[in-house]
Length: 275
Image 1 (cartoon, rainbow, N blue to C red):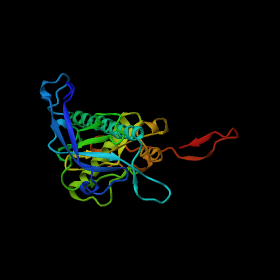
Image 2 (cartoon, one colour):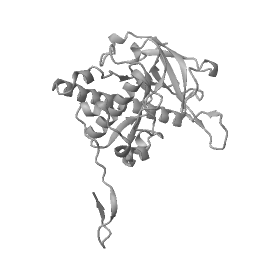
Image 3 (cartoon, helix red, strand yellow):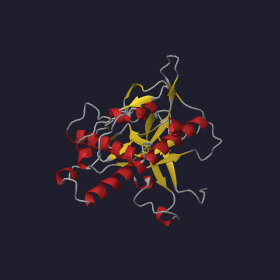
Image 4 (cartoon, helix red, strand yellow):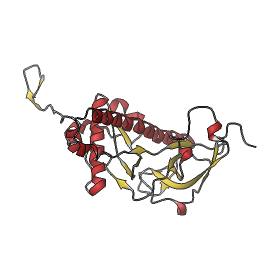
């Protein structure tokens, strides 16, 4: 019997032979189907017509895993509690990534309204977004065999890695439209870093077409535990030195970072001098 709170049921083909692509560093990807059990338009709350995974044509289910450090390369599944926690970390990164990319486009659109950006550059701005997503947990929480999944709309076409997790530069293999997107995403990092007062930016950009997924939120050590194990604080600390302003940064008025360089002791009290 269906609960009055049921909106959808989910079918997931978790067979390894049906896995979509090869396993990533942290997650496997499986085909999934959403079965609507209640009219979503009749449910209370915000409209699902424009910004929900429930409207996606095709979806996938991703499940986290780990490999032991003893040389055994076989994938291992987490305990139920750890699996849910890590899946929520992944969903949290997608949530923040969506917000941070929205921040970029607010900045871009406000600058375009000033008409100070060359039209040739304005015409090259790609319009990207994060995939719609949701966390799925077993209906029976006492089911030991139940798994937690991250549901995402499926990305079709050639999958592209635009920026690596520990990098502030486009991947070397990019060409043409892919290279332009890579440069724009480096510009997006600059915007995010600057507009959040040097607190956060996104990295590990990947996807296809106008869709992005699996971005990593990058922060300093104060927030390193908020966004999973891929939050590389060393790369974050080096961002000012590794980011190279490109045509988008220049066109939208962003200035190169000025790096303070330690040159030695200033006095007997061991204060450091900078220039």
